[in-house]
Structures are given as structure tokens and as C-alpha cells.
Length: 618
Image 1: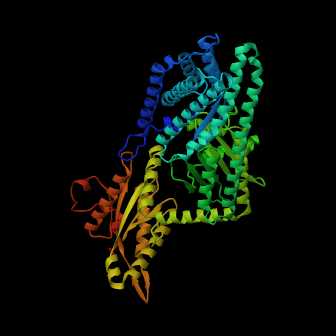
Image 2 (image 1 turned 135 degrees about the vertical axis):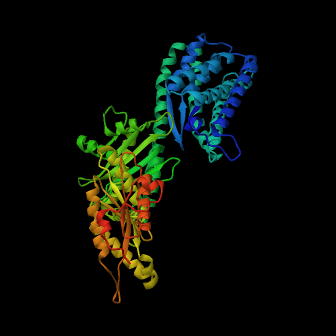
Image 3 (image 1 turned 180 degrees about the vertical axis):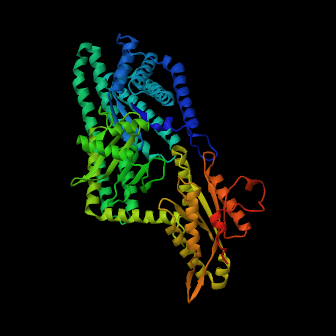
């Protein structure tokens, strides 16, 4: 008999549902209730009517339950997609029970023993446990009914009873396979009918082989119970052989996957697609929920993160803002010499701390290194299913994957592609944050830096100030000489504004002929006057427009200081209000924000001494 170990029955706190249908969890609950109802009905109405064994073995009921629990401890795990399929020695005990125990006692002993093993050994609870108990109960009932129907009152005593027992185990295993397929289908609509054939193709041969050993055990027990100990060796060999077969299948599949992804890395012309496919293949090979690749850039280039995570859109070559975790793992690996490691080894490693902090089930990480140069990290976390965790064999495979990535990087092709992609990303990021005409920071970047300065000032008390600048006389220049001349004037003024402020300050073009300057704190009124003086000097210089034409513009400037009670919206609004007050006051002047500006338009603007001495621009 086999048991499903799938996250599908206990998945997500926010159940998915088909359009107009029930959520996944509700459909699974209905399936479990249906299976339990069928098992309960058969157990109450049919099992008591079945004839028992001619010579029952006088063992207490609890001994049978303990035997079923022991059989469930001895399992072989096979992974199907995200679901782990487990073959146990329960069928050996079941077939013996068909011969030696009353049917109405057999099924309760089966459900009780298996339930104890699932709770104590596999840590199953809730809906998953309910599903497994329901399908075990239904499969046990059908096995008992099949055996009683075929194996009693027949002319052929020994051989026919053996056939009946094997048929009963076949019915039990088929029922379990159907239940497993049904819950997978309910949980994952893409799970196809052909998967039922795969499940039965794996489970039936094993179940029938174990049943044959169970038949031998039942006959031996009937003649000499003490000789049952002799069956321990062949039973153990059977388990070991099937585990070796399962492992060989897994290794063969991993070699195939390794060949495919190696070809992707070496031959792909698209680095982003190659890395996404690579990480998806890695995640599939390890039956993991998440696979990540961190690559450290050369010559000051920022590190990048590529990720494939179940249920999420893949990420390729995303610039990493924070690298503390990756740096800690590299430091631990280089310090200990363990370039590939996993959780559960008892080490206080950076990986263990990362997995604990992010509440992950488990994880593995491998350092990408060639010729003493650390190129990055390959990390896999969250083994799917409740049974399996990453083992030593997984470490060896992960190291192989990491070595192929490092080799690809060392050969230069992928590294060249990565550098080109990173450069493109940086160009796009720069374009998104800067004005295309003047190359000054745009409104988005200006507001971001202003907000950062305000947050920083909240900790160190170094409050910034903002200048809001509107050019006076720009429109006549633009209308008279054309847009090209207007664009040239804006570019020249932007360059002069950039050159005349401090390195720590941020000049920006907000749009049209509006500019702003973030004066990094600490800044006082004297410091603002100095900045205004420099800007006015640049405004007094004429701009060459070509063809012997020149133009000169002025500016209305609003000034606002920040303090502990100022947020970014309030600061920008105050500077903007002061600037419009300056324009209404005659242009070419600077106005400092004052709360009185909020109440009414001042008849006489508050003009700073330096601004009052400037000549308004034409």
C-alpha cells in the first residue's frame, strides 16, 4: 500500500479556486469526507458479515496495530512532480492479517497502526492525516472483501487462496492509487489521467512482491511462529533493492537534466532566459520550492540575483540592494573550507541562520569558485513534500550544478552576456531616474533623495532645505528663437546649476522650466544665502544660442527649511508656495517660506537681502 506525501492537501492559507467553483481546500475536504463515508459504511455493514480465518493466530489486537505501525516505518520514497509517493511494508502485514485475523478487527488495526506511524514518525496532522487514514481504511475494507469473496469456500485450497490474497492486495493498492490521483487532481487541475498509470506502475509491482513475502509469512506463522524471524533478511533485501532501483532512476533523471541545462548555459544567446531555465531545472531536480543564483560583478559592477520560485514569476539578473546574507555565506564557506553545505548537519553556519530567520524548511548552498576567484552562490531551499529533506547525495549533485555554472562563467561567454545585461539594466535605471534633456535627476529621484535625507535627519538632526526654482523669461526665448534654442538654454542652465551647488546637494529638473535643489543638511540661513548667491551669479551670465544670439533669464526661487514636524509633501509644498509668492512679488527674487504665507497672499513678499539687490531678468 502507498501513501501520498503532498503539500496539495494542506496548501496555502488563501485557497485557490476555479472560476465559479469551490476553493481547493473545500474540494479536498469533500473528497476526504466521501472516502471516509465509504470506508465507514463498508466497515459497519459489510466487514462483520465476512467469514474469518479457519485458524486465527492468537495475537492481541494491539500487536497487529504495532505491526502495521512498524511496516509504515519501513518506506521507500518516490517523488512525482511536487508529491512524494511512499511504498511501505504495510502490505506484508496486511496479507498476513487476511489469513490470520478477523476482518472487522483487521481494518481498525490497520488504520490505528498506520495512524500512529503517520503522527509520530511523519508528523502528519490535520487534513493530510485525515486523507491518509480515510484512504487506508477504504483500501483495507476492499482488500478484506476481495479476499473473502475469492478465497473462501473454494475447491482449490492453497493456490487459490494465494491468488485471492494477491488480488486483495492488488485491489487495495489500486484503490490507494485512485485516491492519491483524485486528491492530486482536485488540488492541481493540470494533473493528468496518465499520472494514474505512473502511480500504479510504480506501486503495484512493489505491493505484489511484498504481498508474496506476506503470504510466506502467514504460512510460516501458521506452522511455526518462531520461524518468522527468518523472513527478516529477505524482507530487508527487498526494501534495499527497491531503494537502490528508485535511487538509480533519480540519478539517471538528474544526469539527463544536467546535460540539458549545461547545453543551455553554453549555447544560449540569451543570458536571462538561460539562467531562468537553469534555475527552474535545478529546482525540479531537487524537488525544491526555490532556487537562487547570486553572481558577483567584476570591476565594481553590482551583484545580481536570479531566482526561480514555485508560484512566482522568475527573476533574472536583478541588481541586489542588500548583500549581507550572501556575504555571510561566502565568508563562512571560505573560512571553513566547506564550499557546499546543507542544513541539518549541526553546524552553526550562515545558511542555518538564513533558513531559520526566513522560516524555511531546509536548504543547501554551493560556492561558485574557479582559480581561487569567488563568482557567486547557488542556493536551493524548501524541499517539497513532508517526508524528504536534502541529503548527502543532493549535496554532490548541487556541487556539480555549481561547477558547471562556474565553468560557464570562467569561459567568458556567459560572463560577457551578464556584464552586457547589467550595463543595460543600469542604463535603464539611470534613464528612469534622470531628465533626458538636461541629465539632471528627475522629479522621482529628487523626491526619493529628499525623503531619504528627511529620514536620516530624523536620526542625526541634520535637517535639509529645498530651493524651488522657476525660470523667468524662458517662454519669450522659446517663442522667439524656437524650441531648439529653448532646449539649449535649459541644458546650459542645468549644467551651471549642477556646477555651482555642493557635491552633496541634489539639483533636479522637475519639468518644463521648473528646477529644484535639495540642500543637504545641516544647512542654515547663511548657507542658503551662499547657494542663492551662486545661482544668481550664473543667471546673470548670458547664454550663447548660436548665430550670434544670446539670452538671459532670471528666476523666482522659493526656499523652505525642514524640521522634525516636516514630511516630504509638506516640505515641497512650502517651497512651491514660497516660489509662487516670489513670482507674484515681481519675479527675479527669492522668498523664504513663512507660516503667514498660508493665511493670505502677502502684500509685500519677504525678500532676503541678497535677492532684493538682484536685477529681475527680462
